[in-house]
Length: 201
Image 1 (tube, helix red, strand yellow):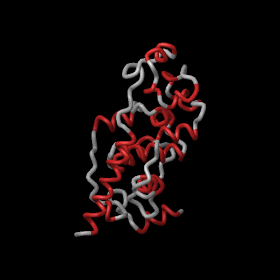
Image 2 (tube, one colour):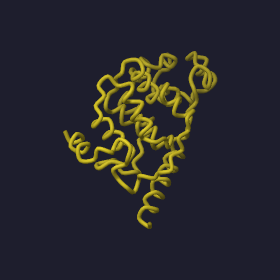
Image 3 (cartoon, one colour):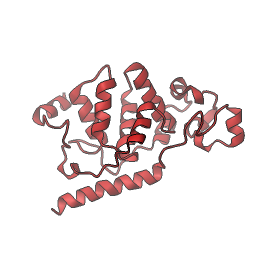
Image 4 (cartoon, one colour):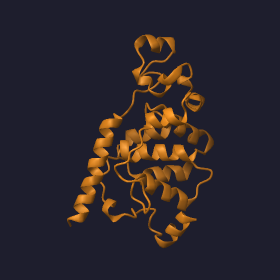
């Protein structure tokens, strides 16, 4: 109801950020990274599992929607409108107001949005909400043999462990396409700069 109210008051929010200070963010919009996000080939198991679930079923849990949206807009610095459009095409429960509102929330551009300096750590989210990796193993079967917490960071597997679990990094499963710590710092700087420019125009 809240997002429907907002959509009624701001019908152009599908294409415009509700917070004007973030209307002109300089997005990186790397098309290759966007395609990897779409296909669930980012090297972050929880992101990949969520996106593959969306592609296979047309549905995704709300917690996962927040995680993958934060990853796209903050870690990859890809315009939230790209993600919103992809969800629009894929979701069986698509609702314009909720989807747009959710994406603007995750991208820190909406009315009640998450602060721009809050960036979800996909690995920590994975450990917290899928500790045993059951969800990951369901949708990312190439990681199904991994035991324990290693399921959340397969990029840290040794050569011996890769052989043990029958996985080849950068082969059967990709290495992370971005360094989360560095990406977080970059995103905060970009959003901070956008806010600074707006306040000084």
